[in-house]
Image 1 (cartoon, rainbow, N blue to C red):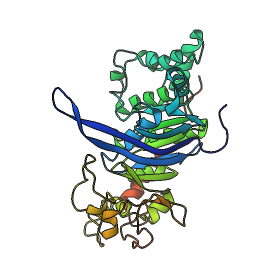
Image 2: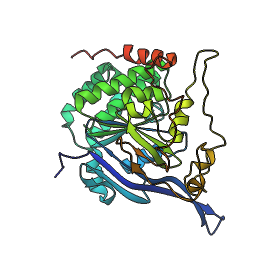
Image 3: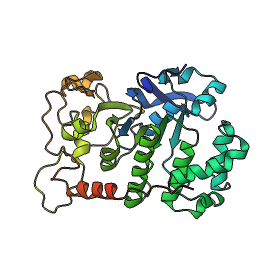
Image 4: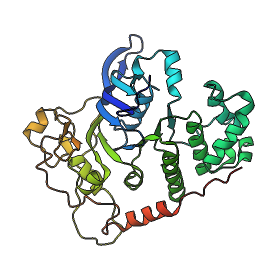
Length: 363
C-alpha cells in the first residue's frame, strides 16, 4: 500500500562509481570515477528541489539514479515507501508510471520517426492507462494542457520550435499521471523568453496536478524562481541544502558563496570585490583527501585537508558539509536575485513573471 504521509521521495547514501578499465584484453579495473558519492535528501509532495552545481558534479547522474535509469552502486531510494532498487522488472515498470523525466535536449529526446500523437500515445498503451478507443482524445487533452493544439498530434518533431518540442516532452512526462518528475536542465537549450514560458508552465502544472519536481539546473535566476529548496553539489556530493531564501540570502558553504559570487554584474564599474575560485575542479577519478573542496577554498585549514566533513544540520535547519560553516564570514557577493543590487536578476525575473503562457482553451 502506498503511504500518504511523510516525504514522497527519500534518498539515503546514494553512490554511483563507474569503473575505469585498463587493457585491451584483460580489461582490468584501474580505478573508479566517483560520479555520485553519498547523496542523501528528501522530497515532499508538491515540492520542488533544485540540484545545482558546476558541470560534471553529478546532478544529472543523481536524477537518473533516482529513476533507476542507471543502477546505483550503493544506497537506498524510496518512492512513496517503495524501495526502488529492490523491485523486479515487472514491479519497476508499474512504479515507472509514478516517476518520469523531462530531458535537456527537446529534439534528441523525441523519436523523429513518430508523429507527436504516436509519441504521446506510446506510454498510454504501454501502461494501459486508457482504452484504445480513448487514446486520441487523451492525446489531444495532453496537448491542450501544455498549450498546444490537437492538430499538432499529426506533425513530426522537426516541424516544431525548440520551445514547442519541450512542451511535447512535458506532455509525455504528464501522460502517465506521475507523482515525481525529474527535470534535467529542461530550459538550458532554449531562448530566455521561451525558458520563461516553460518554467511557468511547469509551475502551473505543479499547482494543477500536485507534482513534485527534482529540478536540475545551473541558472541561478531560474532556480530562485521555481524551487522551494536548493541542494548544491560539488564533486558528487551535496555540500549545502537549504530553503531558497536562506541559501540566496546567506550561503554558508564556501562553494555556495563562490557560485553566488560568480553571478555577473551588468553595471560597468560596479563596486565590490568578488570571490574567485582558484584552480580547476578535481578529477572524480582521484578526488582530494579530506574535504574535496579544500584545494580551492579560501578558508581551508589543516583539518579540511585530512578529515571529510560530515553532512550535518545547522541551527537554522539547513544541511551543510563544512567543518567551519558557522565561522565563515558572510559573503559580500551573496545576493538575493530580487534585490536592488542585481538589476540583471530583476529584469530576468520580470520576464519570467510576465511570460506566463495562455491558459489552454477548452475543446
